[in-house]
Length: 230
Length: 230
DNA sequence: GATCGATGGATTGTTGACAATCGATTGTAG
DNA sequence: CTACAATCGATTGTCAACAATCCATCGATC
Image 1 (cartoon, rainbow over the protein chains, first blue to last red):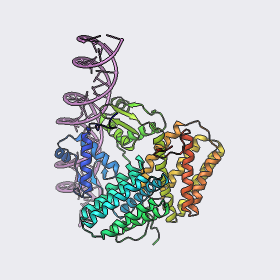
Image 2 (cartoon, protein in one colour):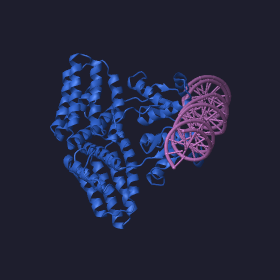
Image 3 (cartoon, chains in turn blue, cyan, orange, red):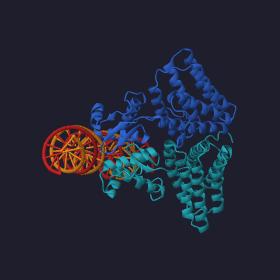
Image 4 (cartoon, each protein chain N blue to C red):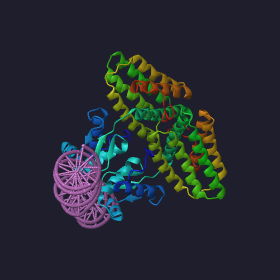
């Protein structure tokens, strides 16, 4: 046997899949603003397909939580309020902590190397002052973190969360933050894993998420899901 | 203003939603055995609807991971191999630990009460010797655990995992286990939360999941996702 | 003047038929 | 008897038209 996979399976992605990707990206990057109504007929015409595949695509996005469907009313791009954003980051904390703990438990040195490479890549673009690229490198780091855990389910759940995260980042585009701090937080996460210190890892991730939240929801302070008593 | 929600919104569930639920339940309870091919035409005829809504329903299940779609071949009920089951329980560990930690962090005494009620309910059915009911009560406990955390995203991810869990339980229907142990494990989880001890909580959940794994995959021992070196 | 009811426009929800694709079967040549 | 090629059946993928539903606007009545 020569190479294990001489050729990649010819990828005949379904049209629904293609449309899903395009729509998801449009939402993610803010090209479709939150709250916008999506007309099936209009979109179908724009994509040059029938309403069948398009409907399938939008239904996927509904299930991903990026689109809200009001029965017999229409489809609307999901709007993320403060509550939603908090929940998003809580969920990310859960997934990414679990991923990190898994890596630690399995002594995955290759994962550590990949994570170091990821934050060093952040460092590089940070020094170049490419803020947009830094954002991508940031997301890449988290992607590497979760994919290194080798859990398809965690990874799939995380992907959805990362799309929403990108929505948030798009929303506060322009806000400045010290790139060095940003890189440092990720280094701290990676090195906690390298050191096999689960507690330090969870602390690092929780603080990292809190940091992000503070920039996204400047007003609200602690207040978990409850806030029943003032 | 009288009651905050005098009446619940009239629930006109879409036909696709109804079909999705029915199919999901059939898969969950083993009425549709893993590996079975699902014919759109046949199913549509059985449900008495067109292929449109039915297709939408199956696509949802595909995205939930309960059904595998081979392009131009057909739909097949997902089969859970050992690897999948391990991943499933790893993902559950992640979600449920996070849920528990959230409850602890927010000092949600109501959640503790709900959890105690849940395992006491287990205790009751265990004493009555109703094994099928005990299974349900078991799943209920975990449902309460995650829903108490008040995170829509964690809860949604968990629901999917619980359906797969039910598939597993259906598969090993008939295997006996000491009900007292089963209840005790859940009590330990609940009391770790009551005590606010995050570490004890995670330990309890991890052992609980390991216990379940041991019964589901008797052959395989540790071996995470790797098993590279014997 | 305010409330209730009817009409209109637009949207989704649903349907049945058509086309493209794939795997298995069968037939044929070597 | 084996290997290859064409055919066949079945399935999904796709489409355009139809029906049902909802919201907004407008008019009538109290």
